[in-house]
Length: 363
Image 1 (cartoon, rainbow, N blue to C red):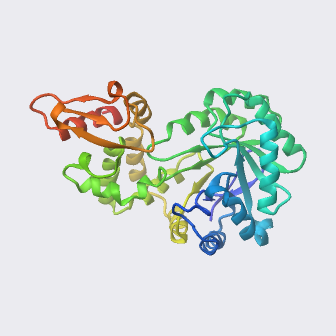
Image 2 (image 1 turned 30 degrees about the vertical axis):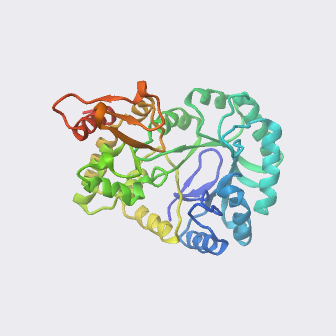
Image 3 (image 1 turned 90 degrees about the vertical axis):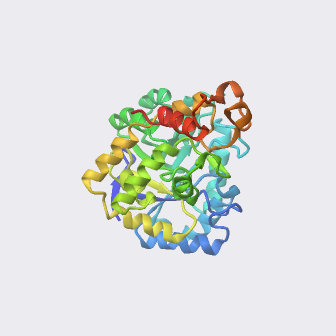
């Protein structure tokens, strides 16, 4: 295992972190305590020392399970947890709420302190300075070693310059979502801020066989289930990986490990074998020419603008074909933002393919 110092926090973390979002979830992942314990023990044996949790993870079971499993390893591991989301789609970054959540997290984790305490999301109703000051108070009280922010907008990073305590930040980083961390890193690195990244597999989409099925389907846009606007990018990377005999998840991790804007990659998993595979990939860097080609392809993607313009959520939407009207619409979205006109003489598949290529990947 390789390790890096997390900026001014002084914490030395493994290059791979264990994501705990699936601990205790009834919807996949580690559904029993025995499964979770086996995977966490495997991670520790592999050298992983950072475990990333939140009060709402695993349907609020993650911290409890993590506390039971890590109690005997507490002096060997670094635990990060978060607060600021209520679990029902709302935000709460008030000092009272953050302090209450921290006390509950300490009880569930069976520890007298957490190493990193993150503001999970910025609450638009609470000044960011108030939320950060509440976490700073926790640091001063010895309940937290390092303050953290998750998905903080780059416009709010300026307020961190006025903070006189160490902090770190967390952002998504994958083939489809990498612009925010790139812009944030440009501001955070001069502040000696450690950066953790998560969702290396785009919430599991890079691992799903559904994408492979789409790649082999002559009419992918009418396949059952979800369709992702990033499919043209995925297709290009899949072809590149196949050419070099590298699976997509290996390509994704290899690309991230060679980037300078992430100190630790938080890997979510549903099996211990996936954690072992991530550790193995860390020790098998991509060939320089392959890494350069991946970066060239990924740097062309413009998914965020495309998603906003077409009104498509990042989690994907079902596509329905309205052949009689010779148009395609996204189910449940506004026609004025999602309608795609199909010129006469052009097949529906060709029109959508061309639209996605134009919007998602600049040539």
